[in-house]
Image (cartoon, rainbow, N blue to C red; front, top):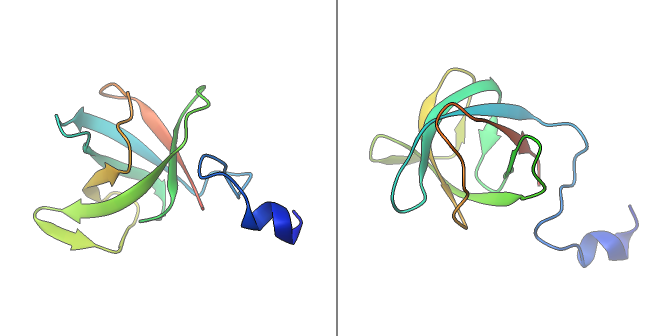
Length: 100
């Protein structure tokens, strides 16, 4: 990817080709927060969520464990992800996580 394409890339684009992790949705809260478990890999705030089979990509704004904000989540952590925009997902759905 050339320097100019990286510089002027839209926020909905994914930089990595392979997902760096997977996240299983347990529940979706009213404010758009997604509660669930990290199935594979590691998740940092700023990474992007993509539902399988959909073209929507949403960046992660914050990661919370309980009432505490954390910087990253690893495999088998139960966390709450706060995406920048609301993401229409259902319970039990698996989201792919991509590096930004």
